[in-house]
Image 1 (cartoon, rainbow, N blue to C red):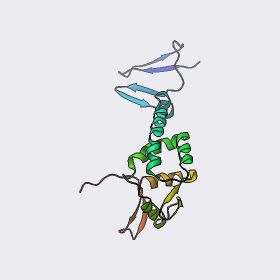
Image 2 (cartoon, rainbow, N blue to C red; image 1 turned 180 degrees about the vertical axis):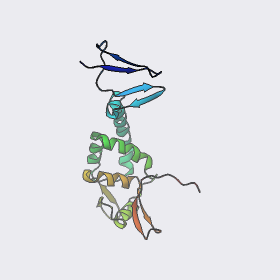
Image 3 (spheres, rainbow, N blue to C red; image 1 turned 30 degrees about the horizontal axis):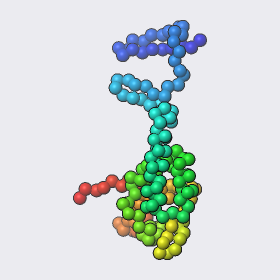
Image 4 (cartoon, rainbow, N blue to C red; image 1 turned 90 degrees about the vertical axis):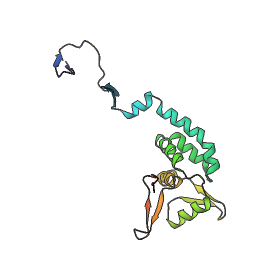
Length: 168
């Protein structure tokens, strides 16, 4: 027989020897003293429709993304994003971090200069990105304009982990 131990706010301890109510073995979340404690993030997301909201967002931005980013295999990119929870989350962040205009000749120049592992197709005057699901992180980082060159660090190339605007 299992014992259920209860604690009160005043620190009084009590033990029940007979089950008088059913309590699940695992808790997804609890509310205590004005704070919501989440123990199982995935279950929490499922209960409150987090991924459904992300999917709806992704479906809504795909037409604008298709118009803004010339891609040879956009259908593959769209299918990957809409079927992968990780990519759904990343897409939302990426949309907020993308530069206002996506200048493909500059993108192609950056890919070549910094040896970014993203394939290009098309022509020299009209380059197209090629989405590769095996290199999805690098692809999304490129869309976010997340690469830089530092002249202070002897021309080293870096991947950006935040794009906070500096106040000068």
